[in-house]
Length: 193
Image (tube, rainbow, N blue to C red; front, side):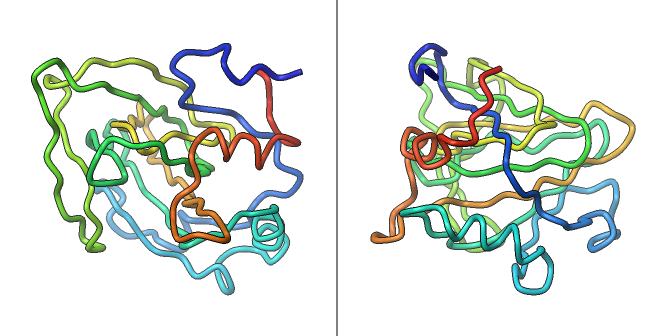
């Protein structure tokens, strides 16, 4: 049986999904290959119905939005949390291209400040010198990721990386799914690596 508590910090979980999204983000968004990019996706026209149906069919799960992020070669997405405070929020990430996600903890005495993104959402923002790295993992396999903590990405290769990012919310409530609840919701698809 899979032991939810064997890894500390437990911020990442690889998945073996029965259906994958059929989407070519490089073809859909070819401009600005050397710049960060964040786009909203229309699941009805940009993602195959089988994958959307699979995600929407998970008991208790609601998908509030479909997004994608581009990380240029040799670049990264700055340290941030996907809310205006440190919290417990899960997201499904499927990356296309080499890269890794890195989680951080603020150093003693430092409190990250919220910023407003181009989508009008409040995120926490920090710099690496203000935090300690606590975990990192490659992002080449579909994954549940903890995005309520400070995290960043890095794309070491000569090519950029797109990530399909699927925020997860509870069907009955407007709130996000916690990381532990996301692991339970996707328990049939966990890869124990």
